[in-house]
Length: 334
Image (cartoon, rainbow, N blue to C red; front, side, top):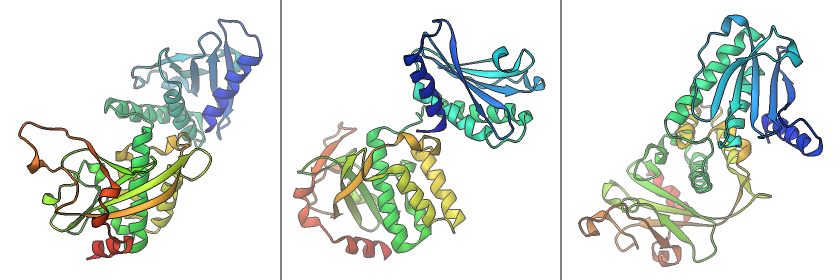
């Protein structure tokens, strides 16, 4: 839970235990380092969230970026600072997701918490709102789906192993986020990473006829498969693994920047870290070499006119192609 979510939950809990006028709003103030207060509120009737950010009068003419689901206006809050103080107010609109609004407000709060003077509030708020407008315009959502988060965790777990064996520059080999056919390209070789949390028989979900096709690989193609147990009370969470990798890269600024940029491209945002509550515990790890005879579908085998193929491969039927994890790592070093 982040600070913004904590404040809104406190307001909502207050509404449950006390009686307020149906057309009123319940307020809380968060004081920044500058001494100025960001004002949080929740409407009694609709439970819609609002945040009001104090600005100087000279900034009232700024046209803030807007998108569907958020209403932006300039207001005064006499109950806090009289009629003279102007606020830019963001209001959650009905039929929208509260968690998305809270993520944006938390992003603003964290930035303003570092500002030393109210004169910087307007431009800082503008920059953050512009960032989110561009984000939503690209058709993205702030939190990865459960399946996408699990897949990303698997790719990062393999990346961590590679860094331990081959050093920080191997971050460049992570290619899955670039819409490449395979998740990793290392030298002439390629690796596809799959995860599952189901019970045996373990299945790797293959999302296209190209994922296990080695015709575009100059060297060897490998499949790394992780079997996880997941729960909300144990295991390692996605943000925890990301922090470990960043720590491994801390002395290589170039690789760290590349890693952070790739994370953003994958759809992971640090501001949403507290929302990833699923923990993963590794139960089994399989490594396979994908070559002639491996159970798969490839493009050249399909009847003309068949596209967008998805299927699953059973790990138990791939065992004759299994290799030791050490053998995989050594093969990738060549």
